[in-house]
Length: 421
Ligand SMILES: [Zn+2]
Image 1 (cartoon, rainbow, N blue to C red):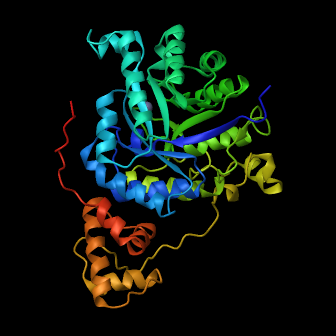
Image 2 (cartoon, helix red, strand yellow):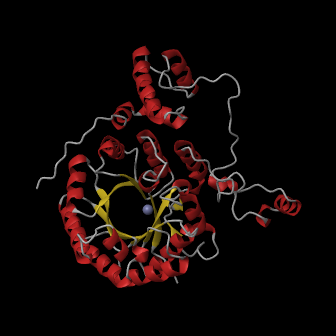
Image 3 (cartoon, helix red, strand yellow):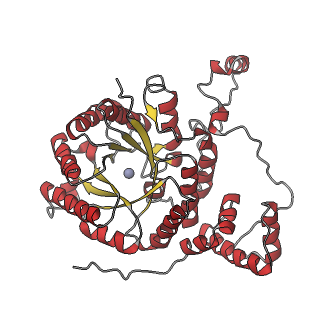
């Protein structure tokens, strides 16, 4: 039976795994809007980028300022780096990040195939604990330690690795099913064993190569909770992520809240607000330029559509006949107004008149022309950045936080950092 006081939390990795994916990317403004929307949705943590990658620096620091200003609150913003001291040092030198996940490869395949004889399994543990010690003594508040390719790692070694992480002050252990190799049954057993032996909160980071990503993620979370520790599921909006993707954010929430074995038995972080699902899925789809599949759980065009005689008749008599949950619960059902006549958009070559027209429709008034011109210049840059008409949220963000927008859109090659030793 699940322990009543253990919880499942969401750590969304759209802004890390989602953007590192082949052919997918987001402008820094879009990543920022996603952080804001995740916060509004009550997501516990956003893995918001790469603190050692130079082109992320301004974006990361600008978002950390938004956190200080209370705009990105209470969501935790965490960075992803390799589990080596150099990366921690560089992350601290370039950014004000206070939460990290540090990653090492743990399977024999990867230690042999990636480190090529330069690092032994014990070296991997030592590098990780050195990085952890350095981070803990230099002001990092929380750290998750990632075992890349955990699902293909010998379980005894994985436990040794996780115990070393815990001994050196890790807050969570991230079990990465990097290749989507686990199934719900194997991951349940493995996670339960690790949780019992190590007694550390566990993150589930699963991939969809065999089509089982959501099932494996929730089964892993069940294993953690049955063993008495908290579980953190890594998600991506619309199931983006390397290759076949990570666990879809909305599907994970639905699986925990609505499935026969989880609903009312396993507790999802109470702050999670399912009613924000529709808007975040639609925004991410626009930002990534990847449409939401018609049959996507909860947010696909067909998720609440009925056509065949028996189904339509049944759903009309009582929607519970053919629907597990209401479309309103996901924030669907509003009529969307689409302008079919003249439309002025704001872009990289916009002039002041069209621009003021766009903002007047959003009920934003500028004090004077100078004020408007200042925002217009930022909107032009933002459009250079995204290469598509800016959304209402993006336009409002720029008008509300022009200095933050300026910072996160600033691109100056910064390759000046050198390790101290
Ligand atoms: Zn991944």
